[in-house]
Length: 389
Image (cartoon, rainbow, N blue to C red; front, side):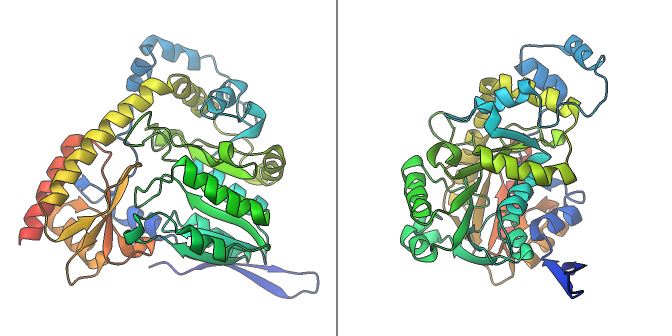
């Protein structure tokens, strides 16, 4: 286990100030185990694309790789190329390119928003479970972080009366993610509008991590963005999950100009620009997003049907069936901690889950079901054998 990180600084009176941040539970778990498993059912990205597969989806071929040969490896466009930001803008109903800034993955986007928009003493409401950034980073800044816990009996959707009671005139930010990781719950546009109304009454900003946007189980698959719903909505996303291109390490922020300006000040210190090659291939993928997302939706919808059938046949497992995303929480009806269960499982069968304890949800494990269908089926078969024993 890693100890919490602390960084020292001094104020003008020479008093030492310590900034404390909690160890990142999920990332520590993945770093420890994902290279030691055979059947990775903890993976959260839709089955990753090769560059050749991306070019094929875009109607191109290997000869198009020649485009990168003449690229001079400068920093490139600082905020992201005009081409890329235009392609990102097309994912939204009302976000022009000037409301977009490109970042090092969604993880970089989230970090920049918290650093730019939250100060010590601010009141932040984080809807959990969620990606740990959304409560540990503001807490490390010195914010007063209050958490609203999603409940299974509500389908892992937020209790709006509870949220309304938490949000006060002092609330600076509401942090959430939609579609939700790890539950797969989906807040539809009417509920997003209700959440926006709660925030509007206090003047709070809403940061919505939308990295799984595009993987809804029904319809077009495209969740409404908070940036299009609320005038103080900040949407973050990236190429990793729905677009199957985690290796590009490219994300973005969609937000009002004042947020982009505030973020840019912080971004100058830790980003400068993303890689030109990453920018190039992300633009190709987004310009052909219909084909890329159709592939992702075919995988997630087929695999969720497989997982649904498997859960129905396992008396020691129950769940709330996801409506979007690539992950689900499986409830364990076993007298064992989630961490012990996951360690025993990977050692015995080679199958990797993520323990709920790494997500603040003891009694559950998280499964990622958007990988290669063969890996999912083979992994589940081995879990069934272990449960039977």
